[in-house]
Amino acid sequence: MRALLLLVCIVVSLGPATLSTAQSEQTHSQWIEERYREATSIKEGMTVADLQKFFTEDGGLQSSPSLRYILKSCMWIKIDVQFDIPGSDQHQYPLNSNVRIKKVSKPYLEQMMVD
Image (tube, one colour):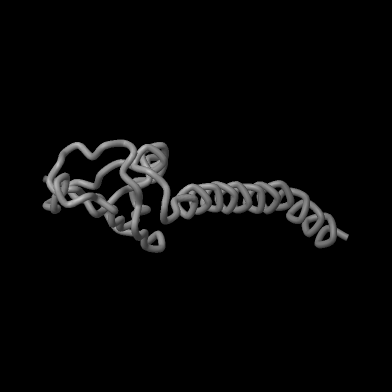
């Protein structure tokens, strides 16, 4: 009888911890899904202004204009972007907000670059 009582006490005490862990995992999954949606929302044909809503330039050595961008809400998520820039504006910095994206990579994970 004591063993059964002990078993019931253990199950009751572990129940909330298991529920809390499951809720925590679901919260983490929802958060990463939201970040992924933000990162994949950038498409070819969008403008620099569209890109800058969710992304900022990564640090480190880059060409001008920048090619690597980091998600503002998670500095580990990055994309590589190529722009459709007219010949006379190739080295313009900062980019005109109306410049269009020519190509965008799939999101990837990488530590933030620091100068």
